[in-house]
Length: 277
Length: 327
Image (cartoon, rainbow over all chains, first blue to last red):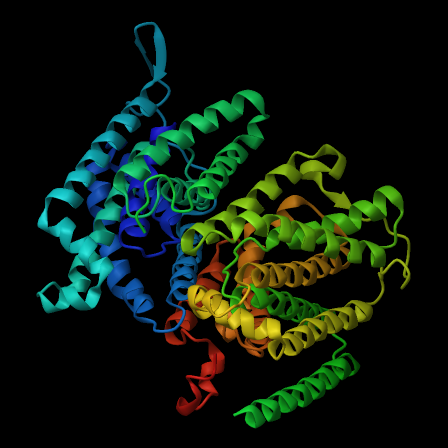
């Protein structure tokens, strides 16, 4: 379960953590991805696992468009840019939820008989649910990919440089908007991947994103802004803490443990575990 | 400059008195219960947003967890009333004091954090409060508390046949929050807060007690928001954790100030006067469909306003020359 949070958080780690842009619509991106893979399954009988790349590609375009149409202007604000980002993306989240209710109705949907749903696999006598296992694998791959992408490619360096000083990168010929639009696309594509995998074993409804979004923010902040590895570690810690809390407290309180650990960590290390900004 | 500032403050006070007077007379002409309801909510959110603005606007500590204080105010009042028979008036005070104390207790570790880390910490602490109240059986858990109906009385601050007393209380709350802001704006605290907001390190080096000024702002802000929570509980006469401590309240408190002009005296009032009627009307007009049209309209409005006027609606009125001093 922890790696699943990690998977949702990895996209956010890119947008929120590395690019330092607040995205309060992250949960809604996840919701859109889940609906997409639901409809691909319902109309074309494509299993969520197969449609994952399609969904990721669609979300890539969506993320880039959202950046170019909305977020770009929110970042341009001279006064209290932080609040403007919070409220534009929050407004966007409300619109997306409203649209989802309008077109898809508030009904709960789920994908029956997918390849992954409800199956378990036994490794050395331990039974693991298949979807979670696949989710974990994909999430590790996504993190490794992102890590190399940020630290080993020119584009990754350009991205970090743009966050540090948009003016200076313009001087060396980097187009800030292209870099950030690509970053948003990639972040959205990663959450698309998460949505496609989760669609096979979670109920899908317009508000589904909200329940995961806060934990994703906490995961990113726990690991520390500006660190891919931090978000990954944050994801694992969040999962472990949630599982342990569920053992001692009633299930409805399981998130309290996560929140408490976040507070504890930032009180000791005000920049998260591995944060650099 | 000082003279100009003093003149502006006098002018603000006069305008506020006139507006309050006009507001106090509106119930004479507005008899429609739906409209009265909207007016009450508008005044309440104006007051809440004004209180939020003290900590987040003036002092620059963006809190998205003020629902915690709102809920604490509501719960303290109603628990004292239903379990111990304490009159809501005392409950209101108690709620305010409890919230202010908790705000200072939380401030102690919280104010070391900066930026996103602080904002997320405030969201998280309100969420913890929400979950705890959800599981606290004595306080009604998820079922919440229904306030027993004892008939109309000022003593118990409960009115079934008329909304007017609620209207006047909301107006008083709004005026109180405005006046506190106005008064603090020109006090040592007000100057310290603005210094802390603009550059905490520089402020500290000039002898501003950064930590204590944040604490002071948090306490005042939490107290006023808690009184608002108590009022809301009496007004709707039923509370449950989601309906008084949910994340949406934190945002609803912040939005009017942000739309009107964050860190300004008039921003929250202006923002609430436009936003709350709009919210209620879209809900009234489109909400019945259950298809989220109200959400689409509302969300689009928020996106457009925050993109078009990042400094808030008030920036429309200030001449370009003044923009530097407008903060």
